[in-house]
Length: 482
Ligand code: UDX
Image 1 (cartoon, rainbow, N blue to C red):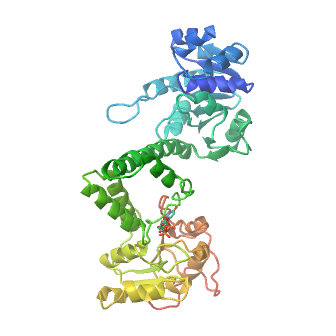
Image 2: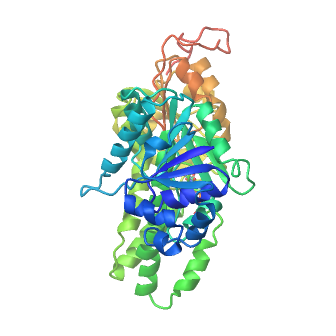
Image 3: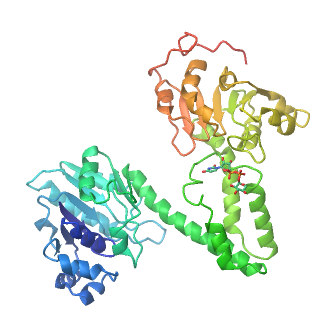
């Protein structure tokens, strides 16, 4: 394939070089003529003056003028190109925003040339440098404004670390492609054919915006993790006697869950341990005179998360809970237990009652006895009289105005159909566990769906409706009193 790489710094040069190793015809373009002249010598000293990465100069020398070409005139190379990579530098502005001057200059320059090209074959324009979320869309607009035809935009972020950029390009842990059309995905699959279906490399195809977000999330997660070690692990070993830093590291990092576990977004983590343990550690570190900013922020974020969806329901869905009846599905802090200690449901109930709900119709496969006995005793708080308990989810949902899913019980996954056959739209479904795979069916039938980790989806009135289980048309009131 014919590839053009725009920008030949720490991102562009290793990328261009490694692509040329795989037999692509790669044109590496830069506006800096002295830099390009240095690369064109093929000499390690000249190349490393600009980008010093182990193994890079050898690849450049090997492929120079065979598969890898350097140029300061992009107009010479655009005809017949399949893919353009933007690898320009994107320095920070003082306010934290990204300086897009170089990127936009390159994009506008390319747009003018592409609009005038003779060969109108499909081209994919790919952002490789880290650029703000939404930049692929911005690039699309730049191209459209100048009348470019038959192009697609994509995001394919680099995850290279300096010092191992060549190794990282040859053996990445993942390739993330964000594109809008199958055609563009297929062009990029051809480009990265050595990584597609690789047994060890994750090849992820998603939207441009998701790919852009993955890059920022990845870097900030790594920095958060480093800060956890510097701000908590190191503090502990510094402040308290007889803690061995190296052993602390081994003991903590051996937890096999440190990976995908935790990425299941929820309405807050509960249980008997997390909350109590983090508060205790904050106390112990504070007593030793050490700062606990990160831990306090973590505790605060988790607590806030427990009622955040109710705030979103009010502000985004414009739902007023006052005098409404709400079904609460799930009381325990997680599935397969009746334990309610620190459960998000406790905070949800508190928040719903404070907002004046008329009734809460609760259902949990295991925890209802526990709830009545130990948590929502009307003798302790008369408002708990507003909670009733029901034998099934469908019973709890009957006659309600909204539904809140608080626990990840597997049986809730089938609720989309139950909701449609039990209550009529308009109706708000708040999903604190992302339990409804069929949410689009609900939305098409007019129900509003507000999930954690997703935008509010407002019901499309007049959409397809399922026939109800009892033969009544959906949309008629359920035959049950509140
Ligand atoms: C936890 C620790 O995992 C365990 O190591 C410790 O010894 C005791 O505390 P447990 O309380 O049983 O164990 O709960 P866990 O399975 O860890 O879940 C805690 C909370 O996090 C639950 O509310 C769970 O639903 C939530 N969670 C978990 C998420 O919200 N997202 C996830 O991805 C994982």
